[in-house]
Structures are given as C-alpha cells and as structure tokens.
Length: 357
Image (cartoon, rainbow, N blue to C red):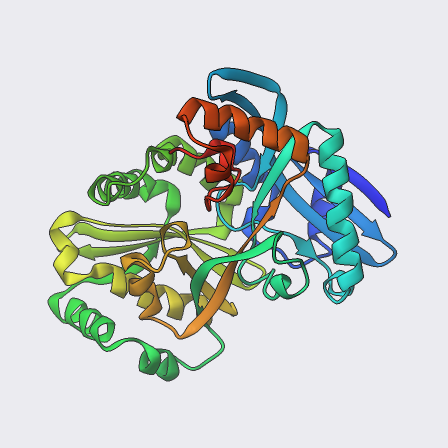
C-alpha cells in the first residue's frame, strides 16, 4: 500500500478528485474554509493499493483542556462540517479486504501523529452500504437523510410529495410568492439576515453562528458557479432562501432559512419544489436535503421527508486510535464531572471525553 498525507495546497488533492466521484465537501477550498472557521489544521489521507483508491479529508484538533488538565500534545480528528466521508473508486468499494486493511492503516498513521480518536461523518450517497462492510463497532447507523430522485418525471415528483406540502406550494403560488435562483454575492447579505433570525428562532447551538456573512462570502468565492441561492419573494420582500451546491450530479441543500412572519405560508416548500425542478433540468441525479439535527427524526426531518420517499442511512465512523490515551482522557473528564468513567464510555457521545455533560 502507498500511503500519503495530502496537504491542502498539494496538486495531488485535485488530481485525486478528478479520478473519483466526489461532492463539494471534498474540495480543498471547502476544507480550507473549515480550517479557517475552526482554527484547526486540515489535511487528507490518500491510500492506494494497485487500482484501489481511498481518500479521506479531516480536521486535526488538539484535545486541549480535559477536565482540569491541559493536554495540548494529544490530538483527535473529525470530519469537516457536512457529509465529507470517504472517497472510494469502484475497485476499492468492491473490496471488503481492502476496506478493512485500509482502516487498520489509517489507525496506525493517526496513532503515529499522536491522535487518540477519530470521528467521521460519512456521505449518505457516496458511502451508502459501507456499514455492511466495516465492523459495527467502527461504522454505525446514526440516523437517516432524505433525497429527491431527479431522474423521475416531474409528475412523479409531485405525486410522491406529501399532501400538505402540495397544498402549501399551490397556495404560495396563488398568493403571489415567486421562487428563482439569484446571484449569490448580490443577495447573500439578505440571506444571512434571515438565516440568523432562523437560528435564533430554533435556538440553534452557538456552533451554527460561525456560518456568518464572511464565511458565506468566502464560500461563494471558493465554489463559484457550483454554489446557488434560491430565494422566495413576496411583494418585493424575501420570505425564504436556500443555499445549494452542485457537484458530480449531486445537489446539496447547505443552509435554509425563513422569515418569521411567513412561517404559516411555508415558502420553504415552494423553494424546494422550484429547486428540484431547476436541478433536474440541469441534468443532476439527486437533490440531497439531509436529515434532522444530529441525525434525529425531528420536525426538520419530518418536513424534508414530505418531499420524497427516498432515504439514505446517515453513517458515522468512530475510531479509538490510541486506547491508552483515550481512556486516560476519559478518566480526567470523569473525575472533573465526579462520575464513573464507565458512564462516559456508555454515552452515545464520541469522543466521550468531549461530552458537554
């Protein structure tokens, strides 16, 4: 096996993406945005064995303060925001032996870099079925996501749309709401205003507020024509908006927001209806709406599931890279919380020493 750590500036990153179907989350420009937003270091690992290729971007974080101790010399690894996951070419995806040996090599390489744990969010479409290849203690089903099959007819799309969404779309059109794609940079400031209002309304975690105007402008610069903004307007006022990316036949819903005063009319339903027809016309295969917050089947998931019956398993991959270091950090956190270490180990949170409770 040939194993290489790939830096963001390396031409190898781009040349690898040219050989494997990928999504916007795998672009070095996107991973670089995450590095700047989180103030951590980002890189990727490329493992090649004959014709088989494995590519995985990630963010390296110092463990920092755990309990009352500062542990700057130990690190953990996490996916950039969204659904990056693992990129595999066809030969690699068909080989169970390659996948399992690759995970072993990944663990070995990370351990040598003083990493104690790694948490990866996998891509619901590109990594579909990976839980059937990897061990269940490594790859877990964390939830479900929803996507719309753009290869079916417009009539079929409408037919499988939940009745209440069809009613909302029809009423919005009759009332004079209009949806259209707008130049991202010209309207991104108006979108971010609605987005921040939405985050306050749903009491989102502080984490989501880092996706501010500066971040989205940088994203627009990085993605160029691969990033799109759909706005729904009513009497000259923006009622809702959605940011989408487009890559290798996959259209991703990134951020969505609705003005408080228009919630009853559900202009977001019209926005998704317009976007799926727009994306289909451009020859894309799938519009991925995502799932609920944290993979939960919450009200957000219920809303998205009304547009399609197509589901994908949301998988996460969890590696205890260095068990000795991992358990040491668990003991520190348990001591700080005045609980038994096993309580943290039994929690769903990974890595458990970063549990907020």
